[in-house]
Length: 155
Image (cartoon, rainbow, N blue to C red):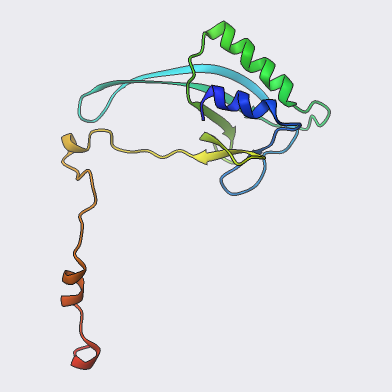
């Protein structure tokens, strides 16, 4: 989800809820403790120099049940951050404390809740690593010819 998308969704909400990939909701007394721009410059395993920039939110929850974040407050934080950091309409990444470490998530929306969706790693230089870019296709006729016919009594 991009910055413009979350701002559009916030305009139509009365409350904010973030749902984890396992279906559980982040407790409603969460705070957004950080909003920032993260730029990662790196070299992939094929030697290509790359750069990636995201807008990053950090969600945090503690036993502070009296200060819940409302859509208009999050909108204010976003607009202030946008003004200070001169954000482009970038993808949003969410950080949230898991049991053992901080998890990083992509963001989606289901019409009611913001969904923290799993991020995955991938090889960015498949050709340079000698890995196929697509899975090999198998002909159904090859599968059928290697199987026994029920009437052949070979199984």
